[in-house]
Image 1 (cartoon, one colour):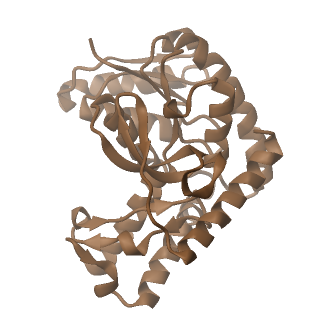
Image 2 (cartoon, rainbow, N blue to C red):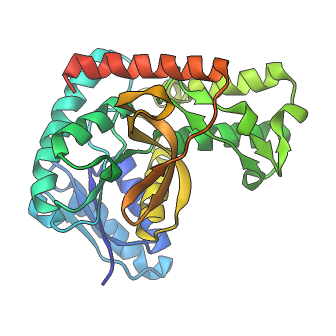
Image 3 (cartoon, helix red, strand yellow):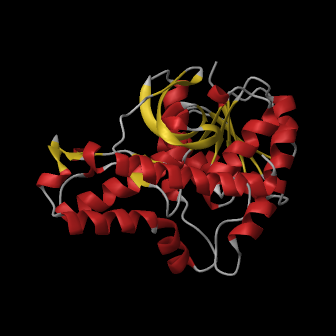
Length: 308
């Protein structure tokens, strides 16, 4: 029997996530959206691609949460994207209401599921989902670290004109301008990045990564990126469903790791069938630890505003 992934929100990110899942033949997919007909239309379109993709998964669209029942994983993309004219506070409060509604309806139908959150502001929404679901921390994760690490690696590969497959890195902290790319752990085919680029170029790539969200909003005007965030969420789902024991940077609830308790932040996580199996402890320098503390303070401020 195949696994089942439900995707809440059939907009650009949700439908892209469904496409990645179908292409990898990873699980049966249910797309759900409050906009009448949207999920059904996207599901129909994907079903018609199955013979070409040579994928035998089932894809259905729904507007009722009953269709998501017994999901192994629920990917939550519902909510407003960051875009010009919407303040971070308005985005936070609006999406908190949406997340509250989604979690309240998903959990009764899939009480054993694992939640992967994509909605913004990411860490605050992961924390909201964790608090509202009543799940243990192993079963509520956010995709931000996978996305930020992928962006950073892609920029490095572009700068050096090498394959993206050669680049390895880790980006911790919050999704946004307080993220913490770990230069000491960044290599290209095993060669430390610091041996390949001068510090000023590395700093420029770090800043470009921190501004990744704003760059996409600037180009799209009235939307947000979809391929990279959806791929990040599906990467986490695949590591869990295949029990890969893969270490990925995910937003997870901390209980003393890295000196932080009570908040969700991006950290290296070993992922397996149970979800989060272990948070990997890295030794941070004084500078890195200070930057991580600033990330934690930024997340705390948002969480305090919505009472989670």
